[in-house]
Image (cartoon, rainbow, N blue to C red; front, side, top):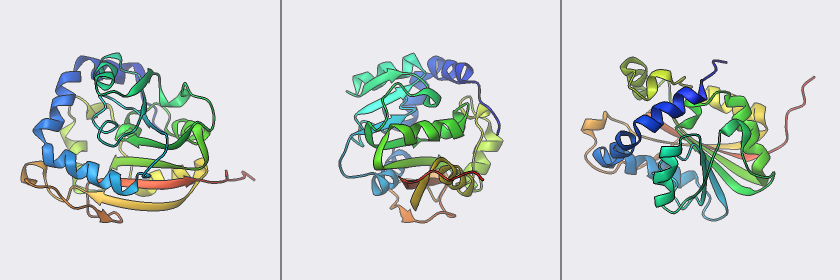
Length: 220
């Protein structure tokens, strides 16, 4: 498994915080379409945490109350959006076990140092039968292929995953009962209205995976 450098990544986001946050206004219908897909998978109520909360662009409209991120500048924006945030990394969450009803990891998984450990930590802080919600750019989609070629200031250090790879990591971490939703079916400059999310994956560039905290696999 390729390892990320968290200090390097948080430095990039610290330097380009305003540029990052402005992207969501510039690409309004892409952003709203992604939110719509996440809402389909997100529990209607409960105490939630977003790992990699960034500037709070997802947590705030989705009413996710808590967030953690290594970038101090991003957290300043998130606090202004009334999110209860702490500085930290997904590999070592600053929360007690069995604290949250659900955990969201939106886009962030491709940037973390150790995806397996992040998912293990997410499971630890979840209550019994709590849910994890992963929002991701599918590496095998048209959008994933564009991002891999484009190498933007944010994504040049990213390691993209396929949906099946993330599902396998989640199963290994002790998650079960999967559901999938997808959005973003065209290039960003072609999206001029809200896209309706669809079940499954394979067509959309942005995929949301929802899974329930289950039993850990026994290694034999």
